[in-house]
Length: 66
Image (cartoon, rainbow, N blue to C red):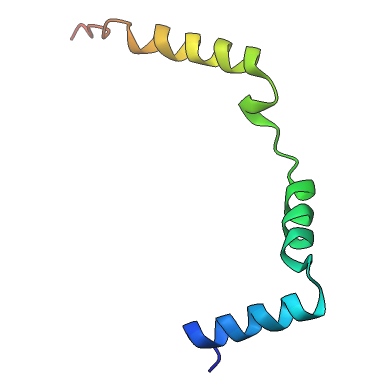
């Protein structure tokens, strides 16, 4: 039954029987593991980056003289 929907349900039942907080603990480990930061950690950085992108997208195309 490995790899089937029924097998997954049995595995989930077994995990919860052993430890009722099994999935909560796994989720907590994953949440603590994140070290990316990014724009969520620094909204001011997101504002600056968005402003740069906006300026670049509004520039005129350069005319190349042949």
